[in-house]
Each structure stands twice: as structure tokens, then as C-alpha cells.
Image 1: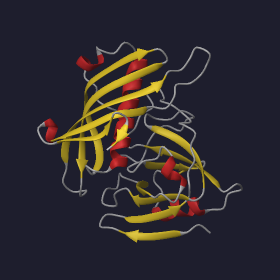
Image 2 (image 1 turned 45 degrees about the vertical axis):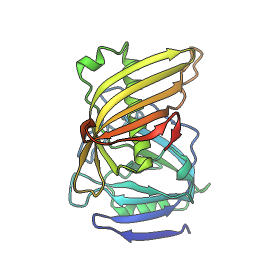
Image 3 (image 1 turned 135 degrees about the vertical axis):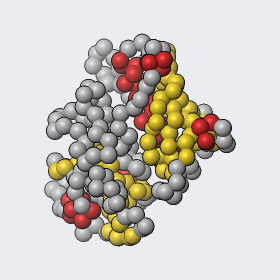
Image 4 (image 1 turned 180 degrees about the horizontal axis):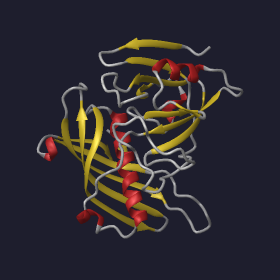
Length: 267
């Protein structure tokens, strides 16, 4: 039996699932633009082998080391559970999962509208090899990218890469936690993609909404640079994105600036 601990907070019941997670990279990439999030709705994406923007699948051994909470018990459209924290004691600490992620499936069972207890039952159920497959979403929905930003991109592949860099930057900001919880991305206001040899670099600037107390919010002007190894004509897939710089200027850029990642090192 996996060790568990239930806790309570002002907004939700917390879950401590000690189930480790292993990941050798993202198992699926962006689906076509028609397969996207329905924001503020339990219905996440069509039933399909394709994943929505921001979704990924990980298969991990137990225990995971996840602390989960109900998304928002005061909002009937915010169903299911999300990741509150990740402990060092489980395998989730070395996976792509980040605080703020939404749990969509446990193995082949959808949990988008499941209760906290139902998710617990699935996560703690015995499995033949003591592993569990989780489908995760970042909860960010689709992004607004104005035409004056899009015109600087050369192809739809560039647009998808920019989208992925923004999502990875949000993931790093959520892991860092210094500025509170990243609630959403308002708009991408700058983007560029360069390539050198087998490496591509994406530079993005966007406005994001943060909260430190789940009640009040503030805006940050976020700048990030992400790099990855490009795929090849021989069928090799592109590598994972690494954020090498990440800074957040509070109050839409008029306030203090915080460097969360500089020269590839977390601050």
C-alpha cells in the first residue's frame, strides 16, 4: 500500500500520492490546431489518439510523490484535480510534470471530471508492474499571437515551436515558484526563431497572470529563450526544449525584474 496523506487548505483538499514518475522525454507532440483546450470547461479535448496543445503522456513507477488538489470546488466548470506540489521523494521530481498541471487520464481512464477520491482510488490501485501512465495537461489553453508577431515567423512549424517554448517557460516559472502561481498567458507579444546547425532557438515575450494567494493577481512581462536539437530527415524527432534564460518583469514590465533562469542556470 502506498503511503498517502490527506491535507486540507482553504480552497481544496490536498492529496499526497507517493508514486514516482520516470520519463525519457515527451511521448507525444502538438496536435493540429483544431484539437485545442476548451477553457474553463471540463471537456478538454476530443477523444482521439492525438493530444491537445500542452498535453503529454508519462509512464512512471510508483511512488510518484505528487501532492494533488481539487481544481476549484467553487467553480463547477473547473473539474478534476491538478498538481499542487511535487516532492523529492517520488519519481515525479525528475519528470516533466510541474505544479499547476492538470491530470487528464490515469492509464486509460479519463479523470477530467473525476472527484478527488476517485482519482485517489485509481492512483493507488495495484498494477502488474507497479507503474502508471498519466496523461497531463498544462491548463493554459490556446495562445493569442497577434498578426504583427506571426509575420516574423517563417512557417507553421515555427509557430508550433514558439508555442512550445512559451509552455516550457511557464512550466519553469511554476517550478520556481518565486513569483507565485502562473494562472494563464494573456498574449504573446514577441517571438523569433533562429537555427544554427542542428539546433534551433526560440525567443519569446509574453504577458502572464500570476497569483501569490489564489485571490489577487498581477501581470508580468515574461521573456524567455528556449533551445532544442532539431529533428532530422531520417526520422529522428526533435529533442526536448531547454529554457536557457527566463525573466519576469512585474506590473507589465514597470516593476521589479526577476531572473529565474540565466545562462542556463536556475536562480
